[in-house]
Image 1: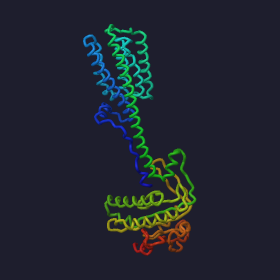
Image 2: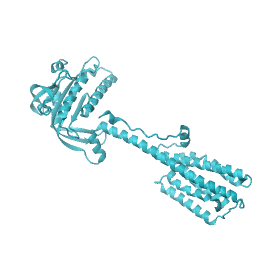
Image 3: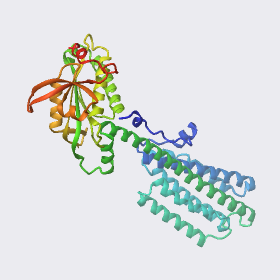
Image 4: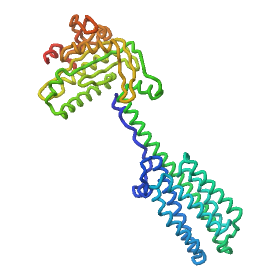
Length: 438
């Protein structure tokens, strides 16, 4: 897989709250459920907006008539005190705080509308009960629907039965005008603020989802070839099973690895293999070859998977030469200089994705078996290929006949050792030099 495919999308950060504001909004929240956290944070935002509104009314009313409006001052102060404890209810349940603040505002506003009368226009605050859908969650309709009904009932009740001038300062038209103007501005600001924060939270969630999806896609691409991963994402329930008429298979094995690794610390063995396999993976991407799997110190790759390519054998041959060159330049394992034994074959195979846990893409068939036998009957430092591969690669490489060899389960076949046409090229160690590594 190309390195570019492993780059994760970065979350959009076009707006970020200051850290102290974020901590304040997160106050009292202990849930790890992202949906609950978002709704409880929005609840806290609503609480702070309500507190700011009540404090502004407390200051404004006190400046207008401190003595005559004492009961209203007490109401606003009590509401602020009660709202200070709303965040503690988040521990009691995902919607405890949201329900409490909604009921508190509905009943409190009904009281203050009754005191000042319908002329003060404070009924507009009942319309804020619609925010209960945001803070409780549309899926919890059994909670927010009764609250919306309560707000509607209180609104109709105050519009129908509350006297225009109420029961406090009935002759003070100025206070009612100020309250009406203040309420309309506050309701607009609170609505805009809640909607803005809800949209910011949604944007943040979508951004995080985009990053998570990118990680998921990249993980899938480490398990499956790109075209196969695309098919699996497009139709997850559709089995992946293909007949490949022209596929080139490679098997490579580190000769002497088991004995060389026997007395070494596991950290050294794993580090050696990890570095080597990573270099092979990069070469796969460079040569347009699909890595299929590693089994122990063996490496399997294929070309002609997904999108068929007429040059699959040539690409695989160049990849094999690059693998051999990479191993030749690799440091020793302990005191042992290891060599690769590589087998290549072209033919038909069946491919598919199998399993539910640790699922993998694999290939089966005569082409796979033959490539495996070519590897096991090859020689260290050599690339052992079949007649079918030599025919498919045409004149892209040099081929030294090995003669007829007997392969278990296959029979007697003619094979060749592959080398580049120009022995001076990288990876073009001669067959004789490769054999000298045995």
